[in-house]
Amino acid sequence: MLDDIRVDEAVFELRPDFAVLAMAAYGVRNGPTDDRSRAWLAEAARHAVPADHERLEAWREAYRAFGAKPSRTRPSVDALTRRLPLPEINLVVDAYNAVSVRHVLPIGGEDLAHYKGAARLVRATGEEASEEALGAPEPGEVIWRDDVGVTCRRWNWRQVVRTRITEETADALFLLERLEPMSLEELKAAGEELAEHLTELSPDVRIVTRVITAAS
Image (cartoon, rainbow, N blue to C red; front, side, top):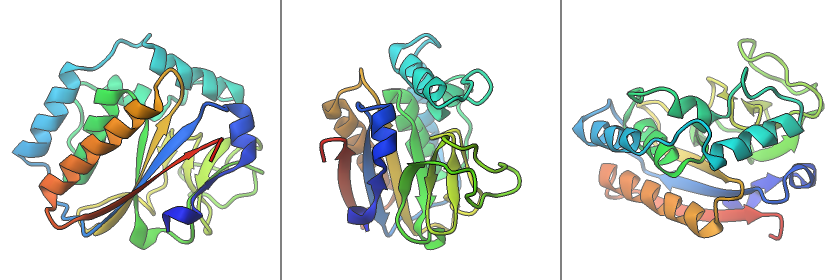
């Protein structure tokens, strides 16, 4: 499944430094927030960076490059870092939100049972199917999509309800997104931390990863 995930060349033309670590986790045991995930969130909040941090600025620049206004529709990690204390959602979402804030990178989480076909990061035509609450993407907008339509608008701004991770999720896809100045080694370290959290929650989970860059 990971081998079919792709990033369109038009996205790499926009940001040649973009990379994504795709992580599939099979056999996740999710549930309500507990003391473990609450501690992860609290620790991440203690390490939250200021609003002018260079990694946040890199994502704002990327948004401006395709015509979005990052002060109106913020990159996910920018929005999350401003929400302290961090929201409690469920065990798995808490895990990746904590890693997102601690490492200052956007992370998306998808329920594979509700995904149709492979994940693709593309520049929108403006005709893609999208949920009414999110509205249709604008031509040229960077979006994640599957065979049904949009799964996340404006790169990592807002996810559709259809593919969200819930307490019933058993198999999940995580998309850890990197821009410079974050290094690929730091990206992989964030992935390892997320894998550790997921394994603590679900000792029998099977995790597979792949890093996609312009060179690959």
